[in-house]
Length: 209
Image 1 (cartoon, one colour):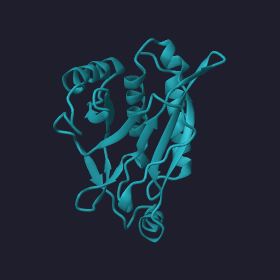
Image 2 (spheres, rainbow, N blue to C red; image 1 turned 90 degrees about the vertical axis):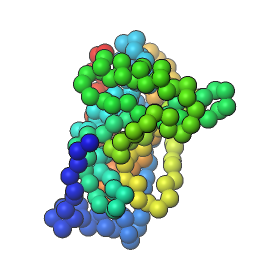
Image 3 (cartoon, rainbow, N blue to C red; image 1 turned 180 degrees about the vertical axis):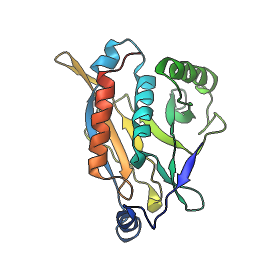
Image 4 (cartoon, rainbow, N blue to C red; image 1 turned 90 degrees about the horizontal axis):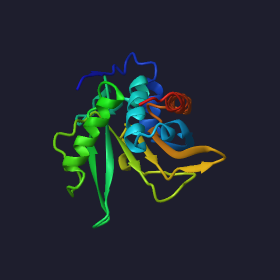
């Protein structure tokens, strides 16, 4: 895991960071419908495909790779890894797994399937050991569509983006997936989220497992 400390004295965003961390602590979310027709038509599994595409897009933009380390230091990670939820039907709880995302999609899919086979049935909040701090969170709620989704993170010190997906819909030959993106305004503006969504859609349209 690599990172660099952000020099608040020279960072062009320092005023915005201080405002949205102290004067007006502010997180926000945006929910969009992502066209996933090409992903479904490819025959691959939707969840790992979305984890891979989200990770690659997160890695493109520094606004989605910033965090406060335990001592309060603002850092920019070189790379992020996906942490994702799996549901346990027997007791209706979930676990957080993580899978290293390096290389191409087939390599990630193999790693994802190994982790799912080894840890997917293990109950507990985080059954796979060694989760690195440069993880971002993804959840899937396949039981319902939604037009809006919001999480409340107490203390406003969590800067890493959170992604939540719902049940997809097929209509007029196309398939769309609700995707909620939650970010901290101290490091990420609406422009950055819109750019992220545009890039993610382009990646989904061009996805070829």
